[in-house]
Structure formats: C-alpha cells, structure tokens
Image (cartoon, rainbow, N blue to C red; front, side, top):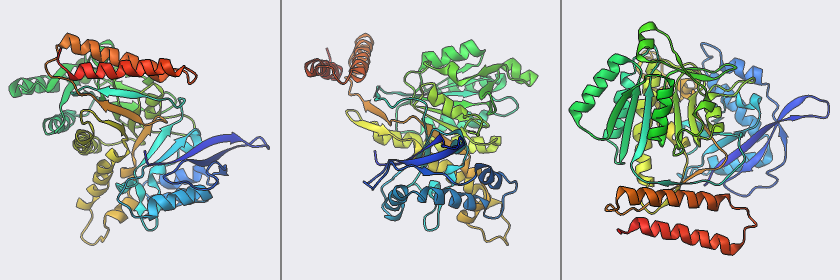
Length: 455
C-alpha cells in the first residue's frame, strides 16, 4: 500500500524529562535516514489552546495546521517524503498516517495539516489523514468476504431523534451496487415501531430491525449478526473512562441511558468486523491523559474505527452518516470483486464528510462575506472532528468465488475450514518447514476450488 507513516513516541531524556520524538516509519519512496529520531518542539498546550478557542481566530485552524506540518518537515526524511507525496501533483492517493505511541502527540489535531500550496491536506482526496493505534504488535491478517456485507446500525441516543440516521443508512443500502444487509437495533420505542412498519411495507429482505432491549440483548445482536461494519449512534464520554451510553425504550421515556458499553466489552463479539463508526460525542477524543474510544476499539481487536474529537450536534451527526455511507459502499463495490484480494484503507472515506462539514457554512455566510471553502476551513474546525484510527497493518480482504448451487451446509463447512486453515497458516512460526507450509497452502487452494464448484 502506498502511504506515508510518521511514528511519534514518548521518550525519557537523559535529564529525566519526557519528550516526544518521531521518525519516518514508512514512505512512498526511499529517502535517506528515515529512522533518525527528531524531537517534537511545539508545546501541545499552546497548540490546543489556539485550536480550542471558541470562536476561533479568522484563520486559527490554518495556523495550527501550518505549525504541525512545520514540525514534521523539520525532520529531513519526513520532509523529503512529504515532497514526493504532496508536491508531485499526481492523482494517485497517498494517505498520511500518524502512528501514535505518545498520548501527548495523540492529543494534537493532526487532521489540520496545512501546506501553503496544497492547502488542508485532509480536504484533498489525494492526501487523507489517519491515525495508527500503536496498541498491538503488527500481525498479518487476511479476511475472506462472502457476500452480503453486513451493516449493523445501533441507533439510540436519549433526547436525539435517530430517524435521520435510519433514513441515511436505509437509503445508502437500497441504492448501493453492493449486496448489503442492514439490521437496525433501535432504542426509541416509537421509532422502532415506525421502522418495523416501514420494513414490512417495503418487503425488502435487505432490511431488518430489532428493539434495543438491554445490554445483554445488544451483545447478542452483535454476536449473531457479526457485522462487517458496526455503526453506533449514541451518546459518548471521552474522559478518564471512555464509554458509549445507549438507551432502551423505557430509558427514552425517562430521559436516561442505562446501557453503558466500554470498548473492551465488545472484544471478540464481531470477528468479521472491518470498521466501527462511533457517531457519538467524543468517540475520537484523545487527550494528554487518556486515549479515545476509537483508539480503544482498535485495541479491542477491531481493524479500524472512526470517532469524533469533540462534541457534535445531531445535525452534524446526521450529515456525517448521510455523506459517509453512499461513497463507502460504492467504493467497496468496486473493490470486492470475486476472486480478488485487496487492502482496505478507510482514510479516503472521510473525504466526503469533511467537505460537507466545511461546506455547510457556505449557506449561512452573509452576502458581504467573500469567504470561499478554503477560508471557511481555516475559520471553522468542524471538518476536523471525524478522525480515523487503524491498527498498524492494513486489512487484507479476499472476495471469494462461490458456486450459487452449493447447499448452505456445504458452504458453511467449507468457509469454516478455509478460515481456520488460513488462520493456522498465518500463525505459523517462520521456522516452520517449507513442506508443512506447502501442504497447508495446497489445502487452502483445494478448499477454494471446492467453493467454486458444485458438488
């Protein structure tokens, strides 16, 4: 995968003080001395003070983005890699990732990176910006995709109408060229009744719904449906104890949230999951004292998570959902072709939401204000709120070719055999005899052939 990765880590210096140092972890081209350590000199409190002003200075977001990009460019190898990635003007994408082993570095708004000629990099589809959660050792992982794609939407935020969330998810699925199944788990009793009636009237097997009856029932829904994409619309906390706060139908009447979910409680519930979307306040809020829900979801075993750095309005939450899923599903439809193997990078999927969050101000500026999109991006930080956390290694997915006449029993048996054998192959020690590896490879190939042919 062509990407640029800068790794930042805390280090205790000889004088006993802790500092943040960084180096070039991965680059689109070879450059000299990528592993040379360089100190991050900017003061995090100063950067965050500028970024956190409400209202911001006229170009406060740009000032922060320039400051952070200048810090990275102070490293010769990073500067050289950025020159290749940004200056070439090529249409080829080169995602920029920050691999964050330092809490102080994670608290900085890297999504604002600003180049004087290319402007805000994250608002250009060629240079999307993401974060790598440095929680787990790098490991190989190959997922097999057997359509349909399962999308589970858990919609339950007390005091917030989740109907637009349902409508955006529903429309994205019904219009998608990809075979997608949407299951909506809904807390509000009135909304659930309306959605259930709508699904019955539509008679479309791609849509199902269930009420959010409690925490145990929610966990069972996730386990049974085993989604590829898990969408959570709820309240969130990003303090010393990051968590999601969801509500049953009774909770909605009482104005409280009784279903409290911590990231670790979701570990292992959805082994097929590729992406978690935390459409809640503070789901992506890293601070110098604690790491975000999105970061912790990756630590809980999910390959990628999208969260929000700040509290968001329900309007912005709906805008993000409405702009995220149509493009995401359309992109997956072009990638998930039977018989192909692809690496899934999610950073590009935040391009549309970021632009929509920026451009919402075009409709409210006065006639005497000449501000265009770039000026609005420098003035308002809303577009920087969605952040992406991923694990160190890219997610690799192979879309299987399966004969349509295979019985369900035969299909399930072969898929289980394939996944177990492949996991065994990936976990083998490097010193495993070549003959043993070849035998396992042959077994994998034979199982794929059996899936392609009717028996």
